[in-house]
Image (cartoon, rainbow over all chains, first blue to last red; front, side):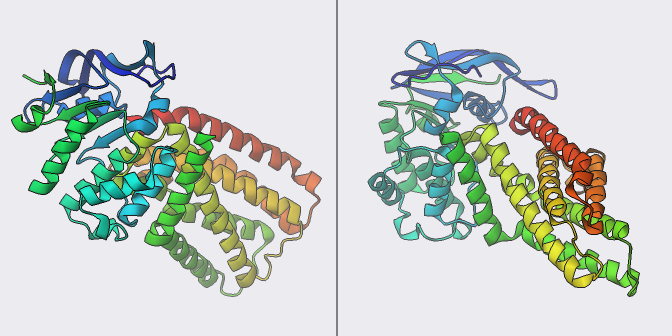
Length: 215
Length: 223
């Protein structure tokens, strides 16, 4: 992941010749694409094709075996450490702190992010949209998997992400939760970069661009 | 400034989490109680020399810290929260946050063991407080520094329990020999100048271990 530059006014995510091997077994090879602020990219493919792996590479959680991923703002490469506080990720792989309440999780993670983009009205609005306002002071250990998934959305959206990664976006969610996610996905891609990894054709249809991984 | 506040936030998060879950604290307290009890049974009222007392003091601190300090990364890995941390903070923020938490935990441990030793062993009388404080502070820093990077390495492995003391011993042997030597001098009541050599070794060890761990951490933490 290249790191330099600072401005974040208009962002572009560029992947060039990206490939990933695990124990010398290739997961995918030679992926090249670009997605900018105001656009959404659907990553599709069968189970095990490497959709989640690609999202981890794009977010800097994994290093590609080949190729490179860069973020550009106003033509220059942007430092990942500068971008990190404005990145959102919802995935079954990302876990929360069970010993903290929902609002404490948000507070703790926001302080570690060092972000000043979290406003109290926005937080309250997100808790209400995802129907967790009445449970915000309860420990996460008492939450169902669907409620944890809703909380992950609140954590990912509270700091107005410039890049939002959604891995299996409606997994564990009921109909109301899935509707809320769809509305937010369409809203976020008006100004930010949205990348969605999914097998569901309806979720892929949220996005204007599409890339298929695997055979 | 934001890196400093993020590092501080990691330390506060770990302290709050530890106070609620007692992942490390319970292990530390039980280990101290068990080992000191065994030593008491073995001595049967005999009065050991200062060399033996200093050796036993750091043996208890070493094995107790081995049982507790690894939790800094192992608990994140076991709960699946390490990816969340990777996403929101840079490796340097995580490393220094975990290091400071482990230093805090080790200093608490050493303070507790010192009180227990002073109460249980009448011969454990600190004659040179300056040497003892310098030894305890630098020893805790060195121990925490080595323990933090080893914990990050073994958190990714399947055989965590076995690997931790096995990897730690060769790395910590220099530190342990030096702190034991300095502790004997503090119990014997020697002047600080006599312990300068040990203090210099401890400072060098802390600098090398912290710098080396910081450089290595990025590779250990990411993939």
